[in-house]
Image (cartoon, rainbow, N blue to C red; front, side, top):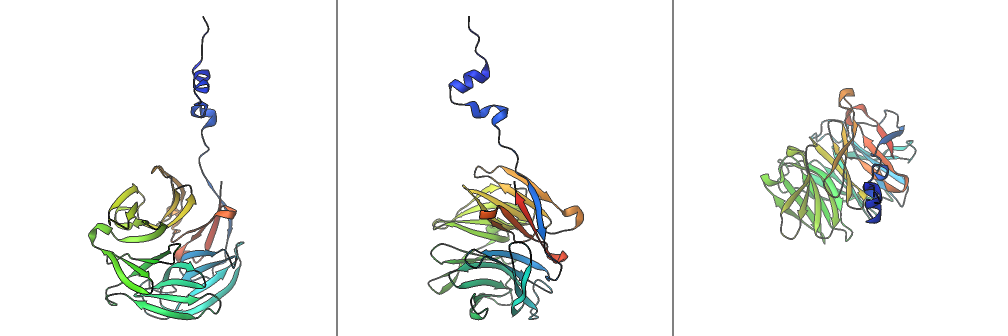
Length: 287
């Protein structure tokens, strides 16, 4: 009698990938470079594929301070600070989103549109209540619709066809920080209060938790194929698969190094992390 091994049986069924030899290797981060420390409380970083440059939002003061000290820097993809104060005169800039020739930046109580060719502010939109606002992250959909989170006052704003409005508000948002437009009907939201990555159906306003256990969720960037990188402001980076599987890739909490609003440059498999209080960007190769 012929004895068929489990491996041979799986292979005959087209399931050889279940063999341990075919399991995908765990993802890891390998440090590529870091900037010098002339940045000032870098909160977010955004890649401009057209200009081949990283924009960095520097708070340079209190996160809710209206002091005019905030600025935007330009940093090269190899970590050189090309223009430290490319745009200045902001208060405490945080999230950024890019669409055509406009860089949208949150600035405490307002959203500011900056012309990327001149570095000058073209227009601003104020929160509903400027004294009770903490605008945080920005994402721009493919059609140019801008979404903004208010992480202290549980609001999501939308700027569409030059109409600025509150899209959604309430405790069910659980302090939304990171936002990412993935298609015309869906928005990924990082709910800081519950440490979760959630999907918001823009038609029904219902939210579905994709993964949790990520503490103070901050930045959300796509890795591709429905997968995401998510940062915990305290110093962790996670990879979240489309099925909700979560893998911790980085933990710098012991060194008291934060990981704020991250960016992923897919063409180079480069994950860039703003370290907030340590005044640097640190970049990692994703392997």
